[in-house]
Image 1 (cartoon, helix red, strand yellow):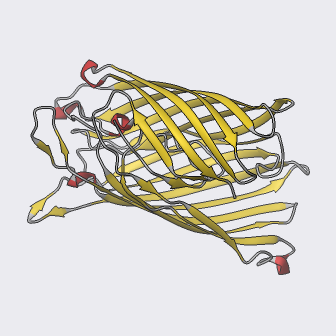
Image 2 (cartoon, one colour):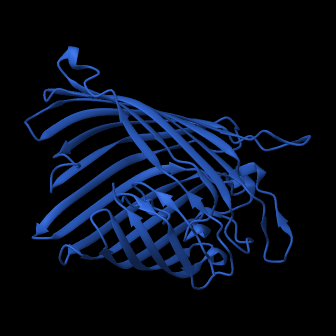
Length: 354
């Protein structure tokens, strides 16, 4: 039984961080895991200084956002625990803060954003009862994003996007040095955006290009791959919305001999507003994790296929408050059969939209 309380804005508590409108308090009942999740999450955002760049003929804004988390475990958290020896998911603390400047005059568009994250993991138990030391997973990450483009027409933006990142791990525990896992990376892409995600029923934002991560430790192989970020929503019938998201990115892990893994994802969702009070929906997602491993480590290559699906219902109590219930099924297949698992969960929410 896992009990989790959360407050968030714009992200679901599941591992993919599916977008929402703001949720306050969530209760998770994990049906097949013997653990207690003492989680709390608060996410808030603020836009400041509208018209900051009005002198340049643009509508501008300064964007600030914070996202602290404490003692949190995700549903499906074994995806985040790459070793097969863990008896339970790992509690961790995570914080995020971002600030940016955005300008848009209907002819050209510009965005500059700086985001920082930190992760601090608790130790966990092995299946044999001994302790896993997770200090080597503690780290902070920094991301700098630039996006610039021009409008092909009133609804379509063509843009270039560049992202630079640094991922810096803890170096020492007491007097014991930890394996060097620091890295820096880039993502350079060409993109197109159609419609306004905040105002239009139909919109899409997709960019694709080169993703590269270079590791300070020569033992860890560098990763170069095709990168992708795609999000879309479509009103395909009155009160029926279709969402399609896809991504391909380089993610962190501490699997011995592996520098990281390439994560490829596709998610499809349907949501139907039955009336002003009731909303029902369904989502399905496929994730492929391809680990980049140095053969000299003695490990063979590993690939995971993760399937999850959900059904949910939401009841709007007042204009800004709702309650919801969701069933979630997660299944992981792998070339390493010892890390495979199946999980079922029921999530109950009380929410605030604002």
